[in-house]
Length: 541
Image (cartoon, rainbow, N blue to C red; front, side, top):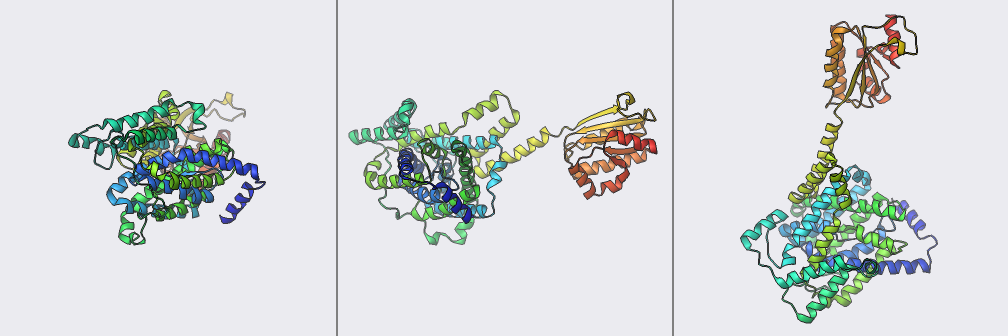
C-alpha cells in the first residue's frame, strides 16, 4: 500500500509548476470559505463546540487530505457524523466522543489493511439514499432548539419532539429572526455570486454584523480556541478497557459512516475529475486521521462531497488544496476567533437546516416514487425510519437485510414450462414419436425459495408419461435445497418407473451436482447436451 501511495504521489505531482500551485491555493481558499461556516455549525451540532469543528477541519485537511486515496478528497466534520455524535455526547460526554473517534480510527485502519474497501458497493443505492434522508431528518430536528431558542431533552428526534410537551415551547423571537434570515439568504443568494462567495458564509457574516451592532439576547457560539491543543481533548487515561468496551458499538457506527461517506464521496467526485479513488488508501487515511484528531480536541471526520466538489470545480490540481484550505481555516481561527464567538447559534442552525434539505437526494427519491419501484421505495422508507429511530449501523443492517429478502422474493418465481415432443419441429429425424415423453423447461436460479415448484410440476405429468427430460440451459445456479429437491424427483420417478434425464446443465450447476454426488445418484448417462441427445438416449434403451 505504501508503494502504491508513493507511486500515486509521483503521478499526481508530475509536471507540477507555479501555475498549478496558484490554482491549488485559490481552490484551497474557495473551499475554506465553504468549510468555515459548516465546520462551526457541525462542531456545535455534534455536542462539542464550534472550536472543535474548526480543529477537526484543520487537522483532517492536513493529515487525511495528505494521505488520501485521491488528489481531490476534502475531509472534515460532516452533518451525517454530527447526527450520530449528538446522541453519543449526551450519554458519554466529550471524552466519550473522543474515545469513540479513536476506536473508529483503529477500525478503519484494520479495514483498510484487510482491503475491505469494496464492501460499500454491496449496499443498494436506495438504502444509502434512505439513511442519508434519515440523517437529514436528525440534523434538522436537532437544530429546533437553537433555531427557535427553546430547550428539549432526549437522544433522538422523537424523544426531543415529545419533550416539548413537558418543557414547553417558548420561542425566542430574536433567535428565530437570525435563523430565518440566514435561511432566506441561502435560498435567495444569486447562483452566480454563490460561485465566488458562498451563500452560507454570507448569511453567517450578515447575522454576525447585525448581532454585533444591536446586541440581541440570543445564544452565541462562544469562545473560539486560539490553539490547536485546547484543554478539552482526548486524555490517555480515558482509553481504559471499561470505556473502550462501552463505546465499541458507537465507534463501529462512526467507522461505518466514515467508510460509507468517504468512499461514496470518492466515487462521485472521481467521476467529476476522471480519477479513480484508491479505496483502501482512503480508508487508511481516514483511520489514521480519526486516531489523531481527538488528541487535538476534534470530532470524527470523513470526506465531504460538498467541499470536495467545490475543490474540483474551483480548479484544484492536487491534494495540496486540502492542505491550503486547512491553513486558511487555521489563520481564520487565530485572527477571526473573537468575532466568530459572537455568531448566533440560531444562525448556524439556519445553515444546518438548509444543509439537511440539500443532503436529500431528491432526484433519486422522485425516481423511486414516480416510477413506483416498490423494492426501492421499501428499502428507502425502512432505512430512513430505522436511521431516525435507531442508529446508522442498525439502519444499514436492516436496509441490507430487507434488500436481500426483497431480492429473494422478487426472484423466487421459477419459470417452468411443460412441452410434448413434436417430431416435425425437430431438425433431426427420430425413430419414435415419443408421445409418452415430456420436456420440462426450467428458467431461473434454483434455491430454497422456489424448489418445491419442481416436484409439483412433476406430479402433474408423471401419470401420463414414461420419460421426463429436464431442460436446464436456463438455470444459472442451484443451492442445496434445489439439489435435494431433484433427489426427491428422481426417487419419485423411479417409484413410478419413469425415466428422468437432464439436458443442457450449465457448468456452475453441474459443478454443484458433482459436489453433492447427484450425478452418480441420477447416473452419468442421464446427463446430455440437449433435448435431441436425450431423445436419442431414450430410443437406445
